[in-house]
Each structure stands twice: as C-alpha cells, then as structure tokens.
Image (cartoon, rainbow, N blue to C red; front, side):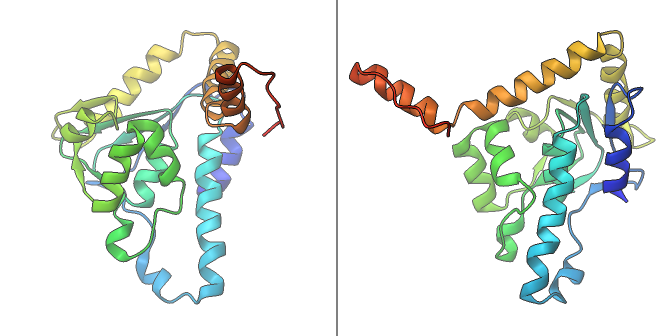
Length: 214
C-alpha cells in the first residue's frame, strides 16, 4: 500500500510537499511485525528486508520536500521511515529509537546510514549499540528532529507543526525546491567517495590525482 502511494505521489506534479504521519493515536510507526518475521525462514528474511528498504529509499528519493510528523512511537523501521524524510518534527511525548540490536538484529531500512548523517557517526553508533529510546526533547537535543512540541489534547501537535512548515514552503518556486533538494542530497553522497579521498591525498602529496570515478 505504501509503495503504491509513493509511486502515485512521485508522478503527481501538483504535489508540493508531503507530510508523513499516522492517524493511530500514540503511534507514528512501531516498525516491522516481528511476530510475522519470526515465522519466516532464512530465504524469506532477505527479500522481506529488501522490500522494506526499497520503499524507504523511494520515500527518501521523492523529488519534493517531505516532513515526518512524529506524534507517538517511532521505533526500528518506524524511525528509519522518519529518517528518510527531509525534516522531522515530534511531540515531546514521542519515543524514537533504532532498537534492533536488542533483538540481535540490525536496522535494515537504511538507519545505519541515515542516522549517522543526521546526528554524527559516534552518537549514532552509541544509540544503535545501546538500543536507546529518546523522547522528543532528547531527540531535539541531539539533532535527530528539527522541532519539538508539547503534545496537545488532540494528539497531533507534530502534525500541526508540519502543516505550518508545509505552508511556509508552498510559496517557493517548485522547480527550485526540487533542484535544491537534489543538490543537497547529491552533495551529501559526494562527500564519502573514493575520488574525494584521492583528491585530498594527492593535494597533500603534491601530485596529480588518479581518479577512478568511484
């Protein structure tokens, strides 16, 4: 269902900003159904995880700004879904964490890559190794989310903030927004390339760099 929705949004030129939220009170996304996963044999686990990762990557590659409105639990794959969004806002009562190591598995939906990009490698390792769960205030303190709100009676404080941000984005040029997002994302991908490291090493050694396009 989510994959079909992403495909529809990807090709709709009228879409300017996407808010990812849940209408289930107190839960953004609690991750994969572990009861279902326990029943899988080893040949089924790989395709299952790959399918989840593919959908999350599709969300990360959407051409328009995406905002995760976290009004409740975002654990495991749920946090990986939020990490695939450009911006994350959360209620102070929300709970977030990559808790897979507690179950003797690792984050399989891109969390091992996106969490370090969001908060830095050392802290990301600490959170993944410990399976620590953060509330909204703690998540804001480490840079995991951009805004933290006190939860309201309706339980949708993060969603309302996401709407405010979407309205702020709306007047901007849609083509410029798409190009800006692409430039930022591709710039982040350029940083860890082998060619970049070769260029820096060649500069240090005062020689011509030998680039390999990697």
